Length: 535
Image (cartoon, rainbow, N blue to C red):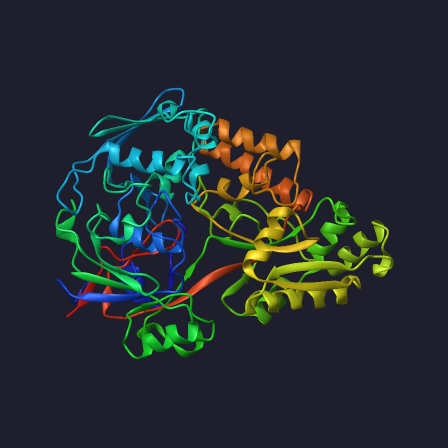
């Protein structure tokens, strides 16, 4: 199977002998020890029912077991659940929990999973950024909106070991959604919405995974230690893992070079030329797509020929040459490295490219739209987050559209909060958008542009697209479902150019070569719970 896992730059002989999704073999490993991981972002917190962003993602991989997960090949792994039953109509999902304990020795129960769901849906919880991921649960959206009751939410602890969730409609990708924070457990009675900082205190921030929180320092980092009550504790080697927040790329690299930290991610692209496999260089592909959104209510972007002309006029490789080798040209809206639901390929490889760059055809399309050689074409603004990479990308797009189509683009770099608000409000003509998958399924990209989606920022309202998405949701045959998802992406991109794909992204990382047995999940993220240190 083609694997969407970290692309490791290692000796061929080592790659051939490694288990799927494993970064290094454990020939010289020993028990115990500690490592330090540096992470770029400290955004968010550790409450799965709260502001669970980058910080939670790293923490959860160490300290919290969800119901199920997926390996680097897309195979299902049972975590807190040891089996799952589904009713014939696809509405009732019953999770049978394994015997497992929190880091204080108490049992993990179905009520702990319900605790997160209920707290996330609480209409008074303004921090729950992923509450909408629960809306396919019967009664969930109504309760969250203030129009229903908690008692009507059909996420129920039948008994300590049985969690039953009833959906409003069948959802064939429901298990993949288990990677969302709101489906992870939080200890009933310890994790409460009344105490918004419970997750900073090791006494209440309990773990049911390989490690558990020992200490947390706001803005600096946290330390986790081995959880002796973990059901796979005998497989956990490391005693302690320190996580440091270091936002500056130069400081990240310096910390690795001086031995202050053992793992750094999100490094600048020049690191690839300075380090080799012996130094611990590895690269993982991200489920990320960066694209342009044209405002469909603004002339002349309401003309499909104009949108297609812009898409075909770009040289994506030249854009990547400008912004760096940690970017890869892409004509796909669904991320390049998204696994297929029904084959051993990436989703994108199941059909021909959505379109081909063609400067001559772009010029013809613009002329057919009434703007030969750009004559009479109004100046358009292009808004983007005010970062170095996005600024370089914006300048490259501006230059190419001027060179190929003879149209003028005014660049407007904005601070993150202003940019996000303008995007949400539709206050733009062209805007740089980006999406990274929350879970490994094409629907996580495509359902953003249904007519009723709150993330449909440019006003896509296409009945054929909505129907393709609805059909994909209605079938549990994955091959049939994939056909509908491809149909939806074709409508979104190659038929109408409602979105204009530009690039995808990779993460450049360094890991101390003495660390072995780092596995990867279906999103290519490294997992350190069974990592070992060489002797």
